[in-house]
Image (cartoon, rainbow, N blue to C red):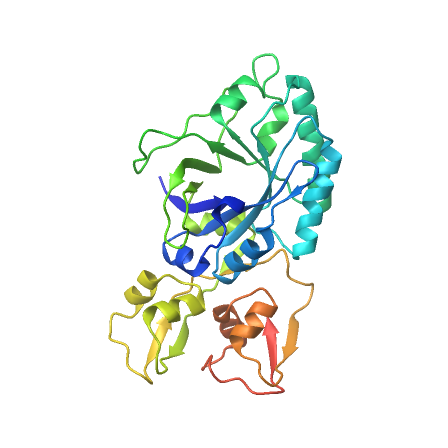
Length: 322
């Protein structure tokens, strides 16, 4: 069964080196934005920007407090996204973990209110996250969940004693399939100096990009090797792993030679404007600075503009922004 690895992070994993995370093979991340009516995760903007620059597909999650107003919690979550200028690739996530003395009926009703409010604002159904025991125990009426739960992608948390390839998580009664699985909360990933949750997407990398309403560049990009370049620095620049780069270029690095950059960059389609967006190159601009400015990548700019040399752009040149 094909799966794609990813992680989810919050304040507890502050100071992440995102290029190293991407080079470790992670392809997506869910980032905590808020908790209840008042708490805003102070690392959200930094994590969001860093993960995007490194080429990971991103989602944002809200920790739900069922004893508090679901409308207000939705407002807080959406405000965090707006303030960070965050366009979600993997959609919003509602994190269900606590009951706070509420009945199942009240929990379910308030959950649906948050989901409806966020979907109305973003135009896309959120993802439901919870653990197997919580869903079995609390998110049930007359022996099962409300029928509408299967309209939403499920991100299930279930931790086996040890994960082996091909393993799948059990589902609570009434749930038909899972989209994401959090299989460990004590993972170790290069670039993160703390334990981190490990996740899997249920499908291939191409299916993950379709789920995210994104596409991968299909046009190979070439990089002219400069003095001081390393496989790691080039991989980080273009948002690919060192392994991908070496597999595409088994030769030694020599200044002036060309490397092929494998096409593995996400271009979110949902944020595209009705017509092509252009940018006129200004003094001091580089493709890297332009990519950061428009939340895209060097490889995507090279492909969209059919540039033969990504290190050579001129002041006054008009670039298409994918």
